[in-house]
Image (cartoon, rainbow, N blue to C red; front, side):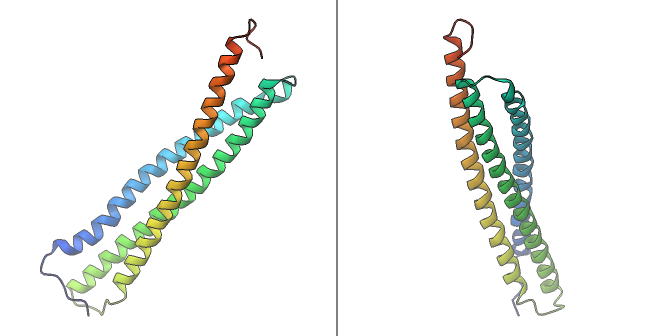
Length: 165
């Protein structure tokens, strides 16, 4: 049997940590979802009239951008899946800690396995968060490359008298 700590805030700390992480991850999920929506809108804009363009540097650049946007979309979807798993694991960890604290305080049952479950689900949540953040980092890097290429295209366009490449 796990002893009940004298400090009532010890159990609260075990519950609050995953709850705060759940909230922070939820905000990150919202922001990532918005990034995905903006990316889809950009994809429609870039891909919309590619077929109407003559074979040119601009057409090749747009085809390259569509491919890059598709890769970015896949990265954002993987990040969202990881973030959804993270939220679920942190929520389960918080709930498990709450149940364990309640059972322990009321001496209702032997709770030896409950801290292990809370720790395991919290660990899966952290690992999933690390995965999601790595996907977001890769997507941000690809996004920066995309912006750099578009800026280059605009500069090249601006140096031609009719604005075409």
